[in-house]
Each structure stands twice: as C-alpha cells, then as structure tokens.
Length: 452
Ligand SMILES: Cc1cc2nc3c(=O)[nH]c(=O)nc-3n(C[C@H](O)[C@H](O)[C@H](O)COP(=O)(O)O)c2cc1C
Image (cartoon, rainbow, N blue to C red; front, side, top):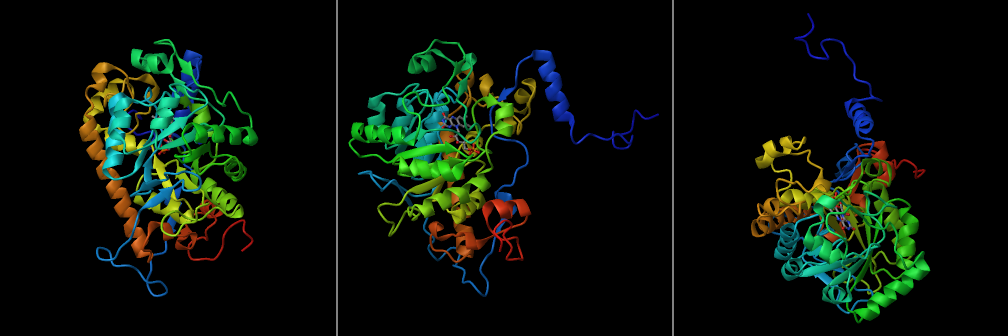
C-alpha cells in the first residue's frame, strides 16, 4: 500500500535534468506546437546580489550614527552635454515599461510614486501618455527600434531621452505585444491595427553601428536644443565593448540591464538563455568607463564629462541598491519590483490568479492582458480596479524604504553619501559571485580569476 505515502517516502527520485518544470514544458510544446511566451525576467537561480555581503565598520573603519549623521542620496544624471541634467533625490529610478504592456493607470501611478520621492520614471515602447507626463516630475522618453508612438513633440516634452538598444531579458530581441492587449487607444498611439499581435523590431531602422548612432544622438540633441541628457540602454551581454561604444557614440548616461531584468512578454527560451547576470555586467561596465576616464560619480564635485551608469535587472531592496552602487553604479532602475509595489501578484487576488492557472507570487503572464490587479492589462474592467493614486502612494513608500535601507548600509560602512560606497566594502559568499563581481571571497583576499 503506497498510495498514502509521499513521493519521497516511496523512494521516487526527480531527475535534475528532467525535473517537473522541464517535463511540463515538453508536454505543453507537444500539445500546442507553439513556444511559451511570458513576462518577468529569468527565473533560474543565478549569481546575484544576495551572494555579496557588506563589511560593516568596527575598529578599522568608523561607522556613522544611524539617525543623526547625514548620509546623502542625491544624484545628478547627464551633465556631460545637456543644458538640464536630471537632479534626483534618490538613485532608485523607474525603468521603462510600455503603455500597452501596462494600463494607463499603472503608468500614471509610476509617475506619481516616482515624483513623490523626487526620482524619474520612463516611458516605453508605444509612446508617452498625457497622464504619465502630467504626473511625472522627471520623465525619461524612450527612443526604441520600433518607433511606436514616437513623435518629436513628445521628445521635446521629455526631461531626458533613452535610446534603447536592448533589454537584459532579451538582448538581441525586440518587443512583443499580443493582440489581446492592442486596445483602440494602444493601436492609435502605435498607428497599427487593433487586436493584432505586434512584434517590435530588434534593431533600429536607420543606423547599424556606433558611428551612425553618434549621428543619431546628435540629431536628437539638435531637435531638443541640447537641453536633455541622452541615455543609451543595453541588455547585458558583451557589456565591456557595448559600454565603450555607447560612450563613443555620445551617451551621457549608460543603462545596463542584466538578464534577471523583467519584460512584458518574450519567449521563455530567450529570457532564460540569452544574456549575462546583472552581477557579471556591472564590473565590465565600470571597467569600460574607467578606461575611458569617464567613471566619475555624479553629485557634489562631479566632473562635467562624467558618464553615469544606471544598472537594472533584479533590483528588489535597498541592499541590492547599495551593492550595485558599491560596484560602481551611479543609480539603479527597477521594473518588476515597482509593479509588485503597485499591487502586482497581490494575494488579495489569489483565487483569480488560480483561475488563470497561476498563483499569487507566480503570476508572470503579462502577455495575456488578464491581470486581476489591473496593471498589465488593457481590459477596461480589470484596469478600472487599479487606483493610480493609491498605487502611486504604495510605490513612493517602497522607494522610500529602499532608499533608507541603502542609507542604513552606507552609514554602517562609514559613508556620508551612497555614492561613496565602493567595491572595497563588499565580499562574496560564492566563488561565482566573487569572480563575476570582482570582489574577494569572504574571509580571504582571493578574487577568483584575478590572479590575486
Ligand atoms: C511590464 C514590463 C514592460 C517593459 N517594457 C519595456 C519597454 O517598453 N522598454 C524597455 O526598454 N524595457 C522594458 N522593460 C524592461 C525594463 O525597462 C527594465 O529593463 C527591467 O524591468 C529591469 O529589471 P527588473 O524588472 O528586474 O527591475 C519592461 C519590463 C516590464 C516588467
């Protein structure tokens, strides 16, 4: 009688190669004949910020008093060429997420939350909505290969421009927005038919390399009177070379998005198998900027010719922010965590997630447009469930907590500004993380791969 025994008690053994997820994927492919598309970023376990720890001060270093001594958090982005660089109160910014992928209310809430704490938010594939512009103090306008929703008027309304070359979830790939999310309004902004799947281009139509990009960037500067910082965003892969070329092309700010980075909709095979982890990308980017002599941190005393580095991909809390900055980022961007703060994957909707074949905490079917929380949908009834004012407040709270957490760590390391965190403050607890982040294994001076 084995029916009352668990699988382990029955001595059954799950294959590490053919685990249940793999079996289900093969069965799904066999049944449907189509590949799996989903949102979120890579779900496999990768070397990440959790594999790093800070060395708090004690005798050899002097900590700062938690609630009494200053630890500043401001950052200036894009002072290299722009007349009006962005002055942000916190280095935690909101990443580009498209209207189309997200409801208009969710986009508005991102602007409200970011503005409340003095940081920036970003448009996305599909253009700028008036609600988003209206509620965003600092709005970065994405200039994407698809050019969906792109118009020079909106370009001039933006506070910065982000030329998107790629995303960490899919370096080398373009966007996807399935027909069920192409409402009349989304279709109108993209000048494409309603209800038909849209696959955005994976490369820009009018330039093929860094020299052409330099011309394009100059065009963008001319159209906007040299007022706005120009960012270049790349998905993490050959990061050292990509960052060097981005700077060569004239970027004021480089955004590097690692493979844990979220997406609204991409092939599962792409998300899990293309790109490199965020942790591996940061030191490569920093090395490139240092070799070009432009890795001077923004803020007080920063040189005019500094190029700032924004890092994204799997940033979830203040510890991640502090670790990214210690490794050399000037600021970070968040996507998935911001959506969760708005109410994505909320257990209040547990039953509805289950009805969709998912569960609260697992829901990644952003492509479907049936999000019970009203965030990744264009369905008017579902979208009406979402309150942009409340969502904005929740996001502002979350951004405040992240900033205070990062300050807590910085003070413990004796730093009076988040920008003062440095690689020397970090150790790693796995060999992989030590090698990728280029910091020593805890308790040793050993950086694998460095010869030290
Ligand atoms: C719903 C959603 C929509 C997105 N849309 C865009 C987009 O339009 N353009 C873009 O460059 N990146 C887009 N991204 C990627 C984000 O800008 C960012 O790189 C990524 O979310 C960062 O990783 P994180 O989600 O782990 O914070 C999107 C991400 C999500 C989750």
